[in-house]
Length: 88
Image 1 (cartoon, one colour):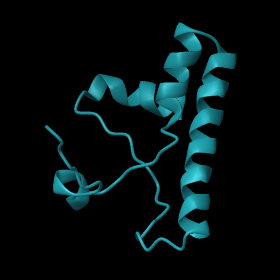
Image 2 (tube, rainbow, N blue to C red):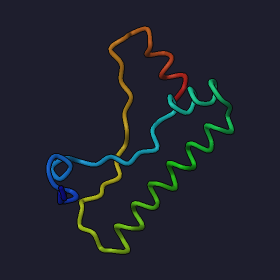
Image 3 (cartoon, rainbow, N blue to C red):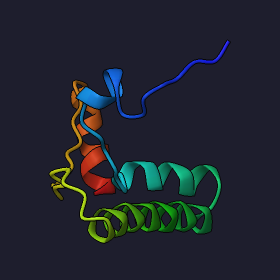
Image 4 (cartoon, rainbow, N blue to C red):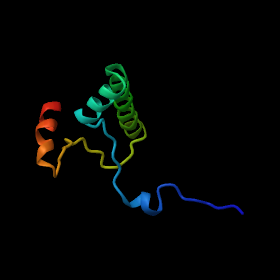
């Protein structure tokens, strides 16, 4: 049986996309668990991915309301606040 699926339809057609380089917490975790070099590789890969998305949008004049905005880190655990501050 052949099924046709429309890309960008359904739930993926009605949500926001997120392209991110994350924040210091993930890089710190990768650095501790693997190595600073692996954290740098992960960061570089994310940077290149974000640049690729932006380049495609610009090259094909895609109207998608791309916005560059700050990211935020939050916690409900007061004991975690200083750790987050130290990493940032």
